[in-house]
Amino acid sequence: MAREVRHEAQGPAILDEDDMGDDGKIFVCRCGLTDDPPFCDGSHNGTLDEEEGVVYKYEGDDDENERRIVEGFEFADG
Image 1 (cartoon, one colour):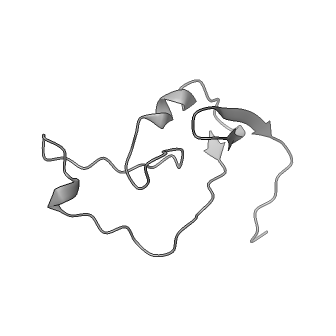
Image 2 (image 1 turned 135 degrees about the horizontal axis):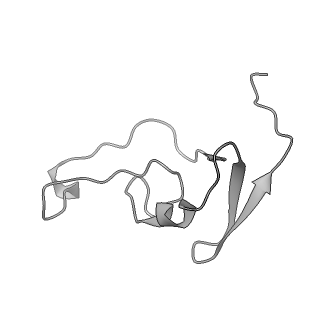
């Protein structure tokens, strides 16, 4: 279940106590689909039916992401 992730910023996101929820936890997105980077907004739930070994690309506006399967891709470093 690989995904294309487009990086739109350089450098780290700096988090502090103001970013913590009521439970004292900070949830950071790891799937790249969140509409509130770097925080998780639950968008990963839309990936639960992805198959192992398949590359997916999510496109569209924030409210309606369209998922498609990518075939025949090549990594930039060969």
